[in-house]
Length: 430
Image (cartoon, rainbow, N blue to C red; front, side, top):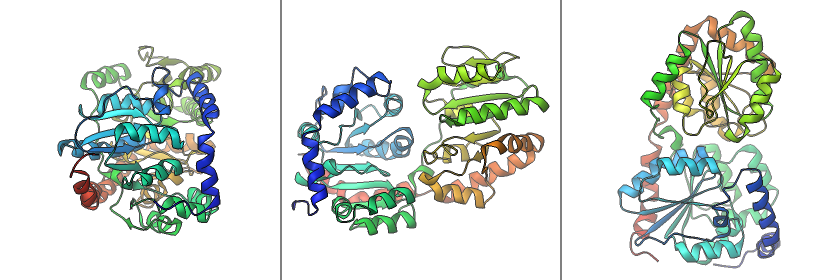
């Protein structure tokens, strides 16, 4: 590979050789705050305890739960075609999901920090024949090292939000150097495709959004029966994947709603279950009665808030709630994937801050398949309206399902685009 052209990229790559002390400090902080698994923290430094399997290895990198869910069908199809799949992720929640959902022949590792010597160690062990990075995971040192070893790189289910596009554009020539290392970018939308080309991607195709094709989890039958029995005839609403600041807004809404709907139950699912204790404190400060799922506390007739702080049970909570507020949309995190909710026969409410999947949200809003709430203070009013007019929620859910059905097919188109790379990878492992 030709040497990087921009001085800024050269400086970044050189700095990663000197970043070990800072990365060790970062690792300790992540362990202390519960964001990294202390028993597997060495994986972030390229230390591997598992053998490389024989045959072609396809390395897929996804950041967190949403990205992991979107590529599970890709992983399953690759494994069915007898490729060895190595999945790397960042978060503990995605690692837990991987342990539950990956095919038996697939391997999970925590991703390595974006440092040249660490990536060198990682690649020397795994010797991947093809690298796929998901959505917006752009890592200069990783990309540069892949090019050094002539390992093809594909950006899978690629998206480029307005904020990220503006940020990368500021780096000019350095950004073009980074994005030109991508052999193929498979964009979710036409807007994403145009932005990726402008940033320097040389080959861009638009197969669509894999999240439309992601399998819909079925809730555990016994858990569903138990939860429905605990809820009884009470009305329920769900606040899913909430972030700090949103929990307070949801609890204020619940307090107001209880004035006219005294039997109403709120199921609150934090984006990060480790925050559950803090949320319970907020519930108690709001003088609301609370139960916590991870503590195996059952819902009582007096329970007003049920904190669902478990992993991998979203399908269960969608199944019992006719309407959901999807978090990450009032907080400055860019929103979460709305398609699981859209496929779950539930009416969807969102805030306005959804740049991570704005194209999908825009379609949902335009088709009246979701309600956009501009101000946190309006949440109670909107929920109350749907409680009093359940037929409107049913129409919203049907419109959302129709939109999802229209968007299917990205998985097949993605594999059509990947075919030359997979064929080359299959002709002999490194």
